Structures are given as structure tokens and as C-alpha cells.
Image (cartoon, rainbow, N blue to C red; front, top):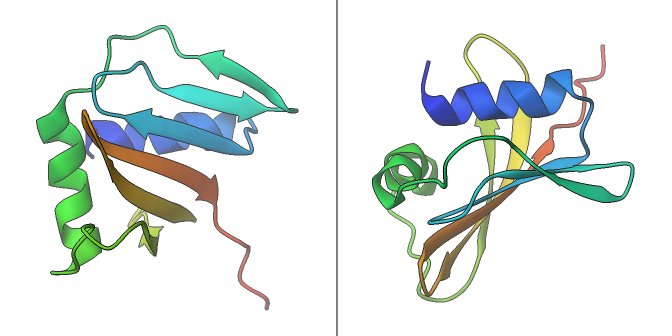
Length: 101
């Protein structure tokens, strides 16, 4: 499991509405309308780039943000908005909607 997948699971376990992952910044959760920074180092550019590459599947961020779904092989799915910023990448990740049964 990648470090990013672990962060997404933290978001789920902490019942957060979203997590913001940005190059050079500490990840932060949004819970009950409040922003909470996680107690960890800032994210490295390569870590985010490695996670994003298969999600983009050849699409470019040059024309703006791209919205995709990430399905954790061992867990839930997530809605991911990916955009290019001055420092690298910014990802806004929200829990995916449950699948109707």
C-alpha cells in the first residue's frame, strides 16, 4: 500500500469530509468544517506524482483540473480532483459515494 493510500484511509477512519494533499505542504483534513493539519512532514513531489500518474491515464493538467475516481483495491473509492500548482500538484480527495445495492 502506498503512503497516499494510507493517508486516504486516515481520512476515512477520522470521518473527514476531505483531505488536501499538496506538494511541499503538510496534508490537512477537513472535518466538520474545520481544517486539521496532520502531524507529519510535508509531501514530496515524487510521492504525489507517482500516485497521480496512473489516475491521469495520459490526460494533461495543462488545461485545468482533472476529476477522477480512485478505487482502493483493499477499501473504498474516492473522488479525486487533481490540479497543477506552482509547487507541483494539489489533490482534493473526498470519500466516494457508496455503491447502491
